[in-house]
Length: 591
Image 1 (cartoon, rainbow, N blue to C red):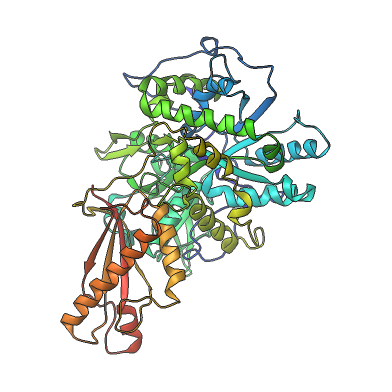
Image 2: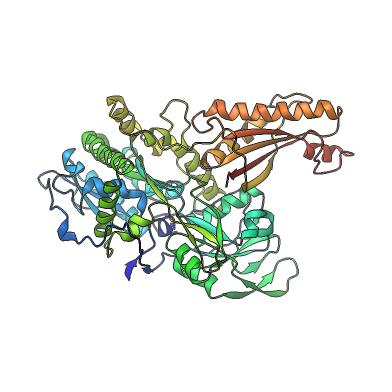
C-alpha cells in the first residue's frame, strides 16, 4: 500500500494560524454564526488504497523517465501537493526536473517539482525566495519561485504570506498568474440519501471531517445555498443546525463513520447531554472510497462536480521576479497549457501523466492517479451507487474563462476568491480583518499575452445543458430577497447587491441547472400576479445571462411562475406579504 499525505486538496486548504499570519479559511458567512474555534492541524500520512483497473498504466519507476533536459537554464522551483488537477503540470515537466524532450525544456524552463503538503512551508519558501531577491540575487537559490493551491483558499493564503512580503516592497508580493486544472468531483460532502432528497433533513445531522478545510467549505456552501444553519462549535449539539465532529485527517473522517463513532454533546436547546453519532462525511478521494467500500450507505450530497468553479488549481509566484522574467513565466504556463491540450485529446497522454505523477508524488504507481482522474460510479457495500474521484486539466482557453478574459465570460476566479475571502473575514476577524483585493493579487497579463499570440489548442471545458433538461436531483433550494418596484418587474437599487451575490454563487456552482421560481403576494388579483411573477423571474434570468453569457448558456436557466399560489406567510400582514414577494432559486442536475 502506498503512503499518501492527503491527496492534494485535503491538506491543501488547511491554513494554520501561525506566526507568519496564516489564516484559517472557512465557508459561507451568511449561515455560520461566529464562535470560538480550534486551530486546524495538518493531517498525517494516510494509506492510499490500490486502484485495480484494467486500463491502468501499471508501475512506472523513476528510471523509466527521461533525465534532466535543460539543466543549463536557470532553475525554477515549484512546490505543489499531490493533486490530479496538476496532470498538465506533470506531463509538461516529464519528471521531477524538466526532462529531455519535455514541453518545459521546449519552452526554455528548467522547472523542478517538489511535493510540499504543508501550507505554512509553502508560505515560508515564498518569503525566503523574496528575501533573497531583495538581497540582490537575480535568480535566488533559496525558496520557491512558484506554489500551487486551491483557488477557494487563496484569499486566506495570500493574506498570510503577503502581509510579510509587502514589508520588502509592494512589488514583492505573491500573485496568481494561471491555473493548471480543477477539482471536478473528488472533493465532496457525503451524507444519507434523504439529505439529498430533502436538504432540510440535514438539520440536526452530525458530520465528520477536517474542520475549516476546503471540503468542509463545500458543505458550508451547500448549507448557505439551502438556508440551513451551521454549528461551528464541535463541543455542542444544535438540533436545528448541521453539527461537526473533528477528524484528524480524511481517512479518519471516513473511519469515524465506518466505526459508528459517537460523542456526548450538550444540546444547545435543552442544555442536556445527548449522544451525537457520525451520519455524514466531508472528504476527498480516497476517503470516499473508504466510506463506500467499508460501510456504504452515504452518497455524494454535493461535490466539485456541481460546484465546478470552486476549486481551481492556481499558480502563485513573486510579482517582482515574474515581471523581470516574463519569458520564463509565459514559457512555463505555455508548457502547462499545451500539456493540458494533449491530455484532453489523448488517453495515452493521460496515462503518461499519471505515471509521472506517481514518480513526482513519490507514490507506488500511476494506477490510482489514472483511474480517479475521471469520476467513477461504483456500487458501495450497501448496494448504493456512488460517485468517486474526478479532476480536470486546464489549457489556455480554460484560463481565459477562469479569469474572465474570454468574450461573454465573468471572472470565475474573482467570484471564488471574493466569496471565500469574505467568509474568512466574517468568521475570523481576529486573524483576517481584511484581505487583498483581487486586482492586487491577480496578474492575468501573462495569460492575456499568450492569448494574443493566438496559440489555441482545444476549446475550453464549458458545461453544456440540454434545452429541455429539468432539475431531477436538487442540490439547493433557497428564496432570495430580490426587491422589485411595487407592481413592476424592475429592480430597486437595493436589489443590485443581492443579484451580485446570486451571480457569484451560481457561477461557482457552474455545473448545475438553475430554475428561477417567481412568487408574489395576493395584492392585485390572481391573473395579474401570475403574469407579474413570470415577468420578474424572466428579468432575473435576463440579468444573469446578460452579465455572463458563457456561464449562463442556453438551457441552463429556466423560469417558472407561481403568482400568489404558494405563499410562505399569511397575506393578511405587510410582513407576510413582503416574504411572499420572492424569487426562489433551485440548483440541481438532470439526474
